[in-house]
Length: 230
Image (cartoon, rainbow, N blue to C red):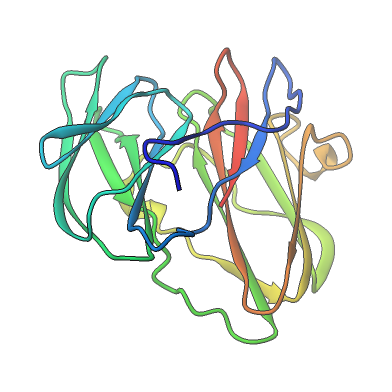
């Protein structure tokens, strides 16, 4: 794994006024090195500091960066360049693990962080799980619908689906289904299921027994939204 690597889109989708793009982020470390993944879910570039030293410089809005601090306890500071406030939290890295932290703008205007690690990590044999996080502060309300292996009629993920500014809400639960292919589609209008067929973002997620994925909706450079599949 490269240090200070930023994940970049590998495919583009047009959505309304230029929304869309997708990529799949690394699920975990491949060389045993502890790793930290940071999602910039605010509208300002963010410096990521570990124990006072800059590990990722000017992480752009709507992007994801990774770094590899040594195994152990650390102080993580997320410092936006265009906001007066920053946020600091303690993190613990472990060899072979991948922790994910998002920097978000809370409803009171303060910059905060949220750990996105899945606490319900065990997926039962014969089951699969998917969750969706709305981390695109410029997008407003979006429409997110899904089909899943055991239910092929499109169903809304939640309504209204707005930017998740409350860090406590970012531990969004996984929806569970059987083995097979999930499909997640995203659009902005109309605000009902009639947008399914013409949805500009369509994500196919084939999952085997015991697997899970997280879909993260992010701002797209230049306007619109895109997604990452983790």
